[in-house]
Image (cartoon, rainbow, N blue to C red; front, side, top):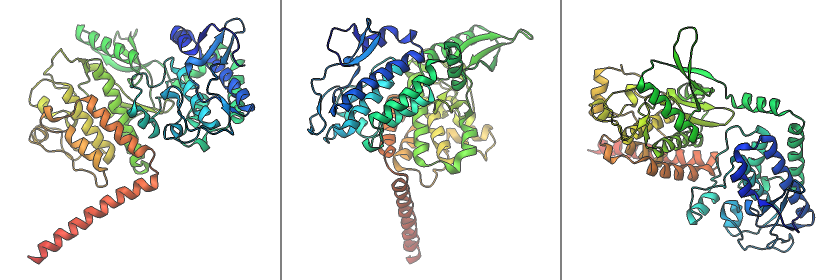
Length: 465
């Protein structure tokens, strides 16, 4: 199980070369062999301390995966607070200076499981610096890859828990992984893929009827291109034609529910931690769209869609999405979400999408669409141009509120770009991610109590005049 001879390649290079050809059965087998190798290390009362994809090696002759580079490996009863290895794989407790334990290796294995699922190293787009270290300490983890089998996902998430005591020991871990492996080992590739497909709900679905012309063809191409590159965008498979009536339709991945219906059904049960998480996922999806130099142009709660299987929010309906360098003065979409400059006839820009995000942030906070008691008419359009915005919901966290207000500023130049917005929203998310619901609610309650106290004091001053 431990490397003592020349091997053919490491896991990182192997995934780079073979990721697109690997089935989930292959990936599960790789993870199982790595976990089994660690099982033997821990059985010798030793901790590896430096697990990463560069020291997981493959033997073509034996058709097996082995753990190598035991340079920092040592007895578990000889404590060490030294930090070894590759930052994305290091457990958060080690980064803060606590002792390396068996549980620290388990964390590293979880990160390797994610790498096997995604085909790329964790945090590949981050600098390996102080900021990443602090993010890991504060709970950031790689995004789950769509289509990951549920049992594999749950085991991986348990193993990268911030609390070492909540991670399974190697014996429990190996037994659970063995069960997953056995469950899928005797399953035919066809039935296994069918299970993944049905779980992922990657079912072709008539999403939107299109009047075909050169413009809609380009729009369909834009959606297809962006969704194939970015996991946060609802997958588009292309165009199809209805043989009965000749209508053309976009074929999309089927999702479970849109944001509007989700809030109607769940508003009273949602915590602020959950609301912040939803907003962050939507902003991250827009970050990906703008990263492709494209504007969405029609963001509203009806095209923010949730996948229960992936436990993730996606942006959909890129029918009006197009290159940022191709200007458009056309007004698309749902009036309460449209930026005032677009209503006034100016071009749609990246900043117009940011305004729409601010309206979605408010909707997430309130549980209802913006301006629900207004007619969507000329008067509302003029009110939006003149600065009317929804009333801030009591109890909205201050950082969230300030960010939302900045993003719906009447002046597009004063709004954040998506990169600054994503960065600030990520910080808010991380700040609250590891806060217990009780302490988080206490903070909200204190904020509300302070507001009440100030109002009462102002009333008192007024009565004294």
